[in-house]
Image (cartoon, rainbow, N blue to C red):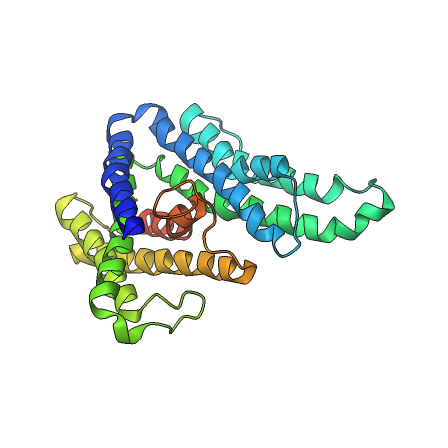
Length: 283
């Protein structure tokens, strides 16, 4: 009960706070949003190093921190400060270059950990930072504030609807996905259904119009469906990683939810799906 109350309080306080940042701080292509993405990517990368370390893939926290923010920080340089070079692939390539060559001349006894360190480094370079960089990409769209809000609502309402549907109707449909046996098919259906409704509502209420599909809500329905599925898969993927490493939560920073990764896991995997579909249907 205590955890449920904490989770509700975080939702009640956190959602309006995020909405406020998106709506009232649009300066420099939502620089405030981009800074939050960088911060959460950094903290998520540090938590991911702990998960990886449980399986022997160890990387220094300072390296993980830098690698974890390369994606969103470099794209922020383009989105908020107008840097014209293809900074994202350049930054990721430099990070990969460092991982491959920085231990070539290390002592022989350290070479045994060379491949596991590279594996850990590439992992934190990609997750969650490179996935979260797609949120920064959304700030470059026209009407970016509305686009970001629709995306966040698709993910957040998905999570809440999945919990409510699972609690009310999921008793007999749990345990299908072994990575997260407490999740139910009813919960997945409820969460994805909520994302679909948000997508259709964006078409109808927020004035999104698609030049590719003649029936107005259809683009929103498809975007909501794919985004909702990706959000559910993001949650399950992080659950699988934690179960594999024998830990319950990725951290303790978010009351009622656990760690930062426990909070952004759905956002990370849903962001590229939503962003690419939005660009395809609406731009």
